[in-house]
Image 1 (cartoon, one colour):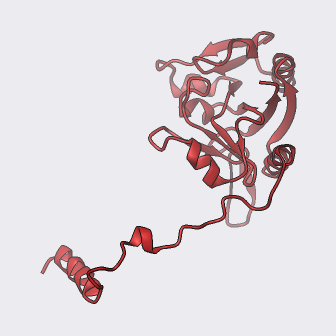
Image 2 (cartoon, rainbow, N blue to C red):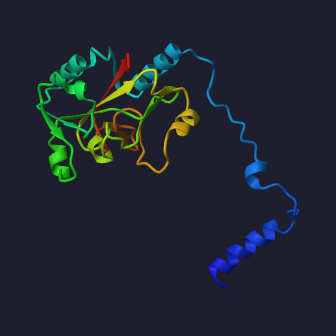
Length: 215
């Protein structure tokens, strides 16, 4: 008897006493989960997002749409960036005042070339307040997954309140599971058995988030 036959035999024995009219599993199991924890205003939800992002060691900034270009150039200047990578359709005005050399992402860029870039600026798909998580889905203002994993410094712009939700269930309703989703909670980090934290191992060492209002 093969392993396949053994497994199928166990399944048949487990189902032997199930009544013929028994409701299917998907309807028998209660799915009335809480969609969010507590009731918050829009401003409270944004404040919770900022607090949880900071708790994960992301650096959080706030700016209006008009202030965003100045904010981005200031953050890049403070990091000493000489080159910055941008996805193919980053909104036109965001980098209007940028001093560094802009490198537009293209398929021909190698991992080594990406590694030499000082930073990357992207938008995001959705931000989750309760978990302090940013989700990127490869849209034109976010680009390929690799451009946010290889450079050492990632600046992510979140449109508030439109792109902010309270919970993971609310985020999943907005996301297309067929797209390349990247879930980000703070800068890349890992710890060894002694709990010594090292940042920048599997992605950017520095994550800065700009909560942009007014759009």
